Length: 169
Image 1 (cartoon, helix red, strand yellow):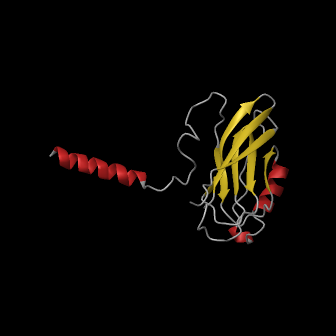
Image 2 (cartoon, rainbow, N blue to C red):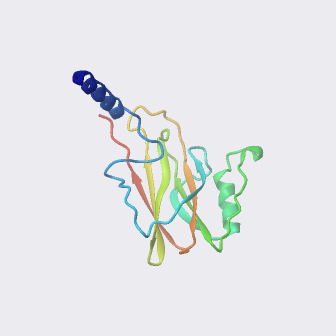
Image 3 (cartoon, rainbow, N blue to C red):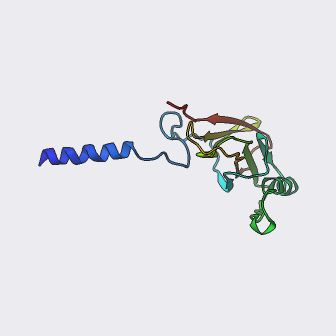
């Protein structure tokens, strides 16, 4: 009976090792789940994996509805009027919007997202993490965008982009 239990345990562990990576972001030692008091809560507004109108890689902080309206129109420039999502109502006295764009990429996306926002003296530190197929990906130009809302504690933001793409073996 012990041999059977051992065999079942080893089988379960080997299957867990083959499980696909969580598409919501990285796991393991590179992205520890340690809670820091300076982390701000994120509220997803929109995640677009491809075909946005944002051609350049970068990040921006939006502090008013006029700029949000213009950026929203740019993000969804490649969509027909009936396909564009509604502009979210944001209380800019309490919140700001952060937009991260990957720019034009030569392959399909595994994931691209703002994963952490930390309050720093004079600015927000925004971590944007991504992964792309190292090899064997579909050759198609994509330009992903991730848009989140955070509490308004600063009107400046510094974006750091980290790519976890593993090279082909």
